[in-house]
Image (cartoon, rainbow, N blue to C red; front, top):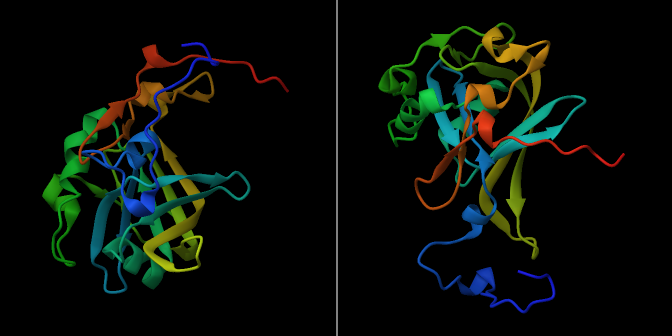
Length: 210
């Protein structure tokens, strides 16, 4: 379609509803990396849960963050201990990742539910997913309750952490370069269960103008 051609636009104001079968917001902002977060509380109970609002926010220091749409166990645990681990969710681990999304009691170990191995980290006391090809050990930097343009507090908390240690399966490093698509990471799309798989044949390169 030519840029000058008129488009049939579906317009809505979120506060008044979207008028569609499914809220398109998280389908439009897609695909999104999955924040597969392991954490532990002050008593040693371990939690593992996926968050679809996740990304990286800074190079130096390296900072990642995930947003929880309610005050969930992961946020409570990170607030108590100041630590968490991000684990890369891949196509090979898709079913296990989905299993950790189950709503269970606080003292139930999602590693066990999903049949995953809790491997010790180096610099934090939170275990990482041994089966995951990449894990980031993180120290808490901020927990921020989000708010709307009118200043009203939202029931959403952004947890930010500095990456203090990185684990990478060497099978995904070629000639000193980490091969993103080779690990076949999965990313979140819309609705309740839509995902995409990142594959090498879907990659293309563009040289930056600077």
